[in-house]
Image (tube, rainbow, N blue to C red; front, side, top):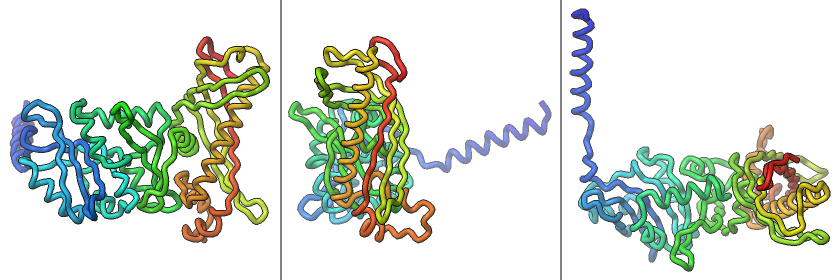
Amino acid sequence: MTNKKFAQRIGCVALSLFLSGCIPKSIIDEVSLMHYIGFDREKKMLKASVVYPNYATEGNSTLLTAEAKNPSSLQNELGHKSQFEYEVGQLRVMIFGDKLSRYGLADVLDTICKDPKIGVIRIVISDGSPDLILRKTLNKSPLYLKNLIDKSIEDEGIPDINLHVMYDQYFGSGIDMSFPNLKVDSKGDIKIDGMGIFKGDKLKFKISDKEAFLLKLMMDRNKNGVYSFNLDKNEHKGNIGVRILYGKHKVKVIKEGNQEKAKMDLTLNIKLEGLPKGVKLEKERDLILFKKALQKSISTEAESLLKDFQANGVDPVGLGRIYKVNRSNYSEQNFYKMIYRNMKFDVNTKIIVRQTGVGNIES
């Protein structure tokens, strides 16, 4: 090795040691790594509930709550109750309670969007106070709640939502926010229970699990989930559940006469594991009957959901964004006041059966 190369390497090592001394250090046992945070409104005050793992004692996670008149003061109040400094870099899930969601999220959203330490986290709302949800996580694994939400989004028909998607929906135009809704069921378990649909920063109304899956089919790339419908044709009767494996959607807004129409084409590839007695998809007649019934059910229920959104003045699908493409004179206010409220909807569904559970067919 030449003297010049040796000197260069010594210089790099010395520089790295010097720079490492300039970086603020946080010992894992001396910081409160926030995993979950919930916000709600309590007697005209903003309430925060924070869950962080207790590394010092190797025990269960810890829940702290604080109240203040604004988000900035709330951060100080939480700091006064913790022996260590809070770190939000490991934040995984943010929950907005029902009272705050209906009152308005603007103050909280405007604050968190300015914090560069907050990464790509999951955003959800809850029935009642977030405390009810967070207390149930204290004896679970540290990432239990995040994993539950991730699984529901990836495999169980809940539309995808994270901090970046929320920013796009909230600060962008032509679309409204929507968040998964959490609840504690009668057995004391945390579960996803549909979605909350917002207008601006306020919760407008909630939709069921099935309606949430229809929303996912109309807007997400990932369409994995189970859809149930009633088959009642001739001698074939029963409730059938099909798993949608993958698919695609295409949406456009066209003008028919003096009225705008949103046309949506859904192509869905499905897996079927159980059938009512007497229905055999190997028979072409039964296969055609089954596909027509499923296609009609999805199309009819999707159109009905779109009409519910329209009646409530919300647009979580983002039809406003689709409408404004190639329209230089687009006005969001004019679209929702004059056009969206009178819009017609037409959903066409194409089903492709990939698996039947006993053998694979393509049709």
